[in-house]
Image (cartoon, rainbow, N blue to C red):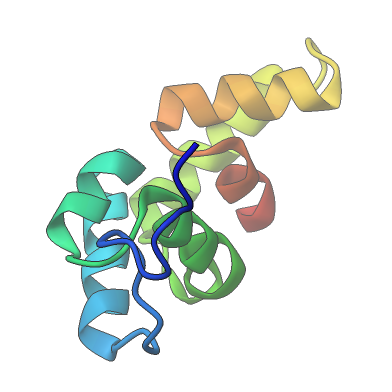
Length: 106
């Protein structure tokens, strides 16, 4: 087995730039998958994009009134019909977002 190279092309050790952060927020907001987002950010892996978003950027995302209203309606529809984890998964699927995003906005 060959040793791994010290620096693979998918790794980038530098800090995230504001441009990368903004593009990640924009693309994720469009429903783009992490693999596809990483392809738009040279040197960033899908895992690093996901972790950056979940740990730092998701809190900065501002929901418009339409999304907030939709979340409220879906929550009211499913809250009594499902266990909590199943409910958030159902709400998130209908909204086209990760379940933890829906839950964090509630």
